[in-house]
Length: 230
Image 1 (cartoon, rainbow, N blue to C red):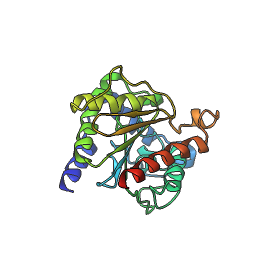
Image 2 (image 1 turned 60 degrees about the vertical axis):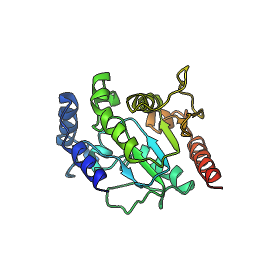
Image 3 (image 1 turned 120 degrees about the vertical axis):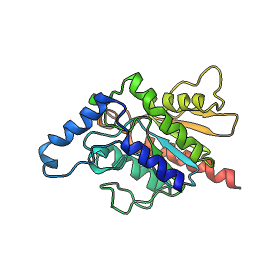
């Protein structure tokens, strides 16, 4: 576990991207009324979960008033609520909610991360910011050798995971896989990549992603992992 602790410290201390540093700290200084008086985390976020995970979940970046506030990815906002409900239904989480970093949430056989660790303006990291942050994701792939299923939440996470595989010199099929909700890519090393729309408000409020659709993705992940144990 020492390697995870070292990585966590490296992530939290990072100040590589001036635009992201300025944004994450600015939103903490001027939060919306519902969060006034709360102390924001306002630093980069490490991944979290089971170090022996067989399921890896790759998002986009922390939300300005979600993870950037609470100090844990997918925690304290609507996206986190949707994700934890789906993980709980598929037996990857001990509870269906993620409200704050000390709420006793535990992931079972799953690990959550993102290719960008700071909340970006308008949820849009630049290509340069992604490249600066990707070494952290690559290191997590090294530290999580038991992962057999990856769920990418959104096209950004999907493409970033493929890029991290490239950097780690892990095989990627040709032609290169394309993002499609519900799509499954199998790599020659046995890992399967499942694609899902991101549970952001722009997808959940419009009905582009429903709770049933998200649950179906994680139910499929559970089925793959359970079948592999037989």
